[in-house]
Amino acid sequence: MRIREPGKIREGLWMLGRAESCVYVVEGTTESMIISGGISYLVPSLLEQFDTFGIDPTRITKLLILHAHFDHVGIVPFFKRRYPHLNVYASARGWEILEMVKARRIINEFSRAVSLRMGKEGVCDRYDVDWRDDVTGNALSEGDRLELGNLDVLIHETPGHSSCSITAYVPQLKALFASDAGGIPYKETILTYGNSNFTMYQQSLEKIKDLDAEYVCADHYGCVVGAEAKDFTRATAVKAREYRALLEKTYRRTGDIQTAARELASAFQREHPDNILTREISEEVIKQMIQHIAHGD
Image 1 (spheres, rainbow, N blue to C red):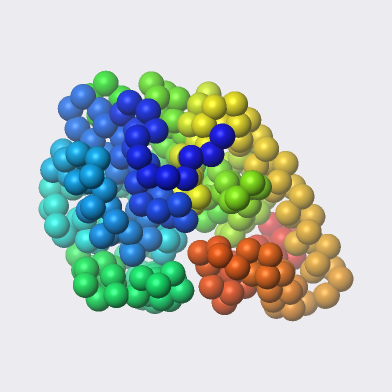
Image 2: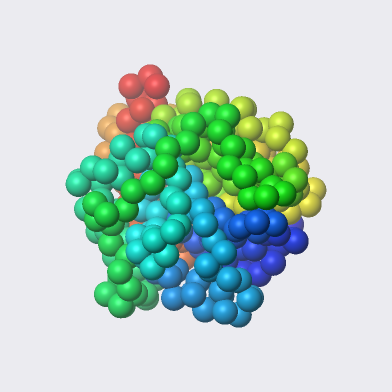
């Protein structure tokens, strides 16, 4: 089963934001934590949801970035500036990327482009959401643990979707937060994106597939619960093999990376016109995947 409406998933776990871009609040006995940085235009929705659901933002002491793509770090600057006590966490590689002037520029440009696509362009002007050099934080790596009183947030490095991807797992809640490294529950299917290295993406799926998850908390299109959650990562691994085969087949037929990417991006936009990405961003993502496959990643 898939939950796409914001609200309480279970005791100690909230899904907030919007269906196409979700963030989660995990509530421990001593403090709370935001997992995932979402897309920038979520800010007013989150502030409203804090009030609606009675979530005290001053109790939130930690924010975990699962990877540094623009649609997963968008709310971070606003909340870090509004709540200076907030400790922000990402992988070491994630911070390397977020410290690059070019990367911050791309994050800000893509955030505005998608906000415009989704009819939310005014948010970027009304709220201080741009990435600048004032947002810093702490680096996490394989085996690290963050404590929230009665809850442990365990960290696994899961590169492949991006070079900086990490996965969080809360055993007490049986909740898995793999972001796009764990598959996207789009409509009734699963989308797979091995953007930076498809082989490593598939290896990361194998790494986390045996974690006991009753709640797979995806960053896009909601939370998977119950029986589907238990097998979701394995099902994602199957979809990844199928999608890789399509990328390889299209590249072999066209003989050109750009042509193959353009063809696949156009087909995806025709089939899924309501997806969050612009056609240009979608084409660039697919191009990255084909490049790595073509070069024998």
